[in-house]
Image 1 (cartoon, rainbow, N blue to C red):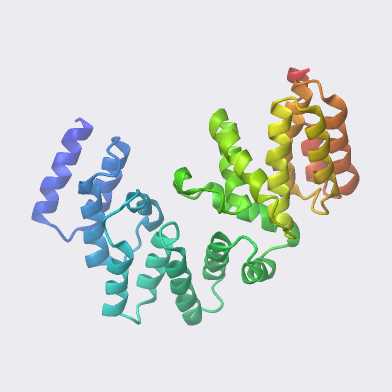
Image 2: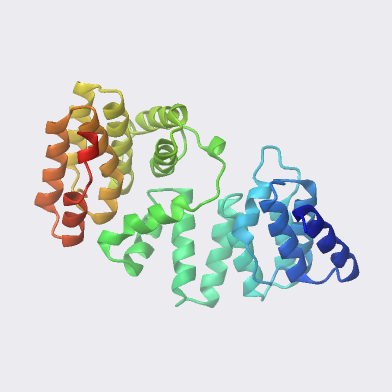
Length: 308
């Protein structure tokens, strides 16, 4: 049976049992994986679920992408506000609204997470979600890092943030010179990894402009300098490479396991382009400052022979 036939069968079943949530979710999943993206049909199914089953568990975060296109006509926030007002004591509705609107209306999402947290003050998942939302709104948010520090060890905070951001569904075109350096860095590294050199260059230039702003937060500084060093290494800009590496070496954050994952790209690119002295300086700095055997093993096992 073809995917097209499966879709038609599910649509026929929904006409008979329109309240069957599992059927509707299955249909949405099938439509998405069949290559039909951002269609009005998909939006209407999602809107139906918001209006009728907003308290149900569903892939709300994934569905947000359908309402992120420029000039999106559907007032998705207003729709969620209606559901919350209908049942103001239902925490699940507020939670689902917060999940879906993280990439659409971050302010409203934060308000929802705060309300959920007041009802469940010891829920670590809710605390984490609020912290990440605050971080997306402002990467230097003191409140966000206060929550992060209460949840994680100092060494693992950055890794948690990067993992969260790298799994976000966000439209790259929404990033601009006002976006946080962290968000721009994630976009730049993702572009680098998939070989989109023009996008990597665009994000690098935006980061360079943003780095002129006085920043004291190493959570922004390190990934920003990493991208700029990678850009310099990719283009064999000797003097700039030295300056960027000095920036990295001066950061007190150097040596955290999550940060090594930024800089291994630089090390490989430096080695490939015959900047072995600079690559070794970065490796030695990690080995000298780091006390974590896992990181030492990671660096020592870097397969650089293929680049020699």
